Length: 461
Image 1 (tube, rainbow, N blue to C red):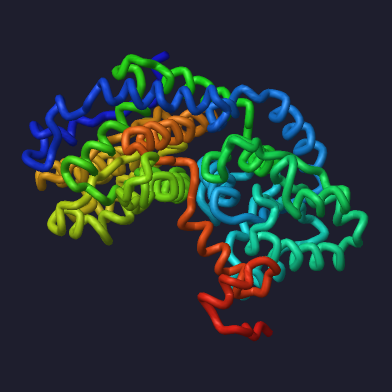
Image 2 (tube, rainbow, N blue to C red):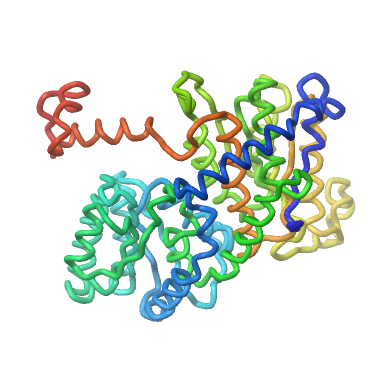
């Protein structure tokens, strides 16, 4: 199908940006088809499961029912998680309800608060400012043993029990984890928490349309049926073998070619919507952790991956664009734009200001017109400077289009993994740091890491 979400790569071509651009012939359609077929085989074999999430209507119904039963009793949802367990839910919330602290009231539903850091001051501030008697806690960890999540969970559990008692606290805690293993699963069973599960074939950074993202979204009043509907339609487009109707593959080809053929090792993701600022940080993990790999599937050392850098339009026109236009030409730029704003404002024709030229030409015009003009001007300036740039255009930001856009970006990432010839679904570099942390904190079974990387006896107060 032809999704209304459009991908435009005109400004990555040599005809637009000169020697730093691509020839159309360098966007290899055979490689694209091979990548699609290769990824399809991984999905069909059960190795990768995120494309199946929009088809799971039973989980969506169960999440919706639980959320509707709990919503009326609480004013805040405190989410404990890190990485994909936090970035995905936060991205959905900010996309639909808006950035903090100016969020819209979504049908008088609870606000989402994401505790994704263990800085003691950060954690203390949460507990000092939330009303425990009106808070539900959603703890998310696929492995069931994430140090950051379980440490904050133990602190938050004590805080909640002191306020409402053990029995009521258990009714206010919901866990999202693996169905078969992990300490969080065992804790949830022992304490009788409501539990939702992350499919075994869905990694954390690809889990936003599993209960990881759907549960917090439903608790906060988002329409998760529309999210999944959009993702379902994105699936159809992403499995298309016709490049013209497959925007995820178009984008994957452009990103891969600019990196490998033109040395654009950095991607600037320029979100021209405050509602897409949270999703840009979700995408940063998706792109970096999936494609930043030392070895390929053949075992060869390759060191692949672009470095994703979020930028916010128009704010970062005044903080970063000088570097982007005149600094090292080692970057590609992807604009995320929206055709129809959530609302609009007219710039007043205030009589006493019309005598000033800097005000007169703006008076009477829509604020959205200025916003769009600034984005087009930034694209034009980068193009004029020979900096390759492309654009995703969403008709508007709502549950349907966000579900579709997130799914397209996940397919884009998976296709790029196939083009690079790497495993886009593991994260060995992250795992080493986790093991060292476990050793330094004295966890049994990790003594070798403590001996190699830290003092023999770590004093923790």
